[in-house]
Amino acid sequence: MAQFRYLVSDVDEAVGFYRDKLGLQLVEQYGPAMAILRTGDLDLWVAGPMASASKPMPDGTKPSPGGWNRCVLTVTNLVEKVATLQGENVHFRNEIVEGPGGKQILCEDPSGNVIELFEPS
Image 1: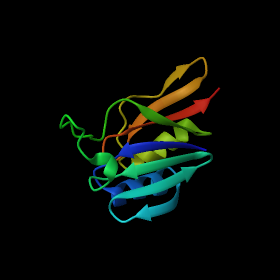
Image 2: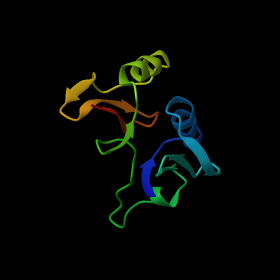
Image 3: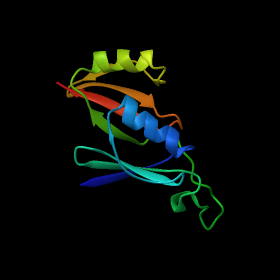
Image 4: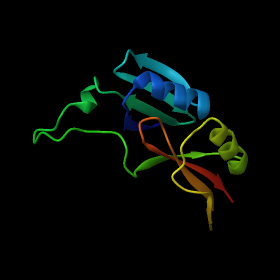
């Protein structure tokens, strides 16, 4: 089992996005601080501003959501999934691109964290 952590602005909003739009299962939630969601053998930890993972570093740098690192979720029909998510006003950073291994697109959760949706060839 692998774990992946995303910092988010609002844990409840993130849970709703990952559960309702991307189909992850809510395993456990620790109030507004953190929640654990699961898909297959991946646990996604979403940590809000009250979580220990959001505390400033010794040099004062504050961890924050966003960036380009991402988890990859495999889907079976990328075109259909994208159309559904666009209808639900999910923000995409690009259009579907195709490479030797399959098709992919980058969408964002409500805090701006990137999720790659990938359909293998």
